[in-house]
Image (cartoon, rainbow, N blue to C red):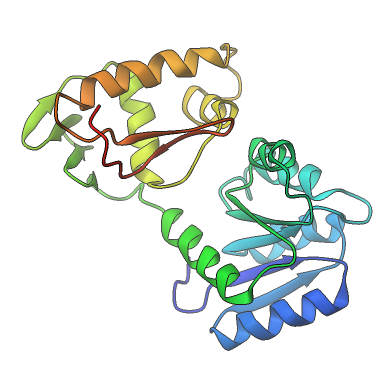
Length: 235
């Protein structure tokens, strides 16, 4: 990812919104690509490798939700972060967007300054961390070479699934993942596991990494999923 001039693909069929987005993004130093429908979005995402996609919900030919699903199923685009732009503000629609694979959403009408802040936050969260030898968050540390986890110098013993789950969270701190996303990205798309199984492993992970008086680093987001995030509440 080119963090100096990240490439943003705008997928939006309303010309005034595209103009507004392009102006504000270019003013902030982003490189901008445009697609007016879902099919063009898929082609550009494959050909141009954007660093982030701003994806409108209501599009010609393919809906934004369907585009998001296809992006996540395609090896070349499955890791590209997506922010959905939507006039649909109710909880059910937000959950649909997240379950389809969106990293964040913002409701129209929106503030350009808030959108820029959201874009920068998502880019920070989704920067590749796979080449790092050590992953860290707050006082939690994972050594990938020795396969060890420590918190406040205390060694933590994890089962294989909990280790993979924690590693995925550490690679994407602050980002909320639904049960379905975690199943797909931690267990794998070819493994059938009940979504509620995620809750069992989250409980095991919480029990292992949190002891009395330590803050709970696993945040539960009602109706959306889980995130590795700062919490002031003890476990």
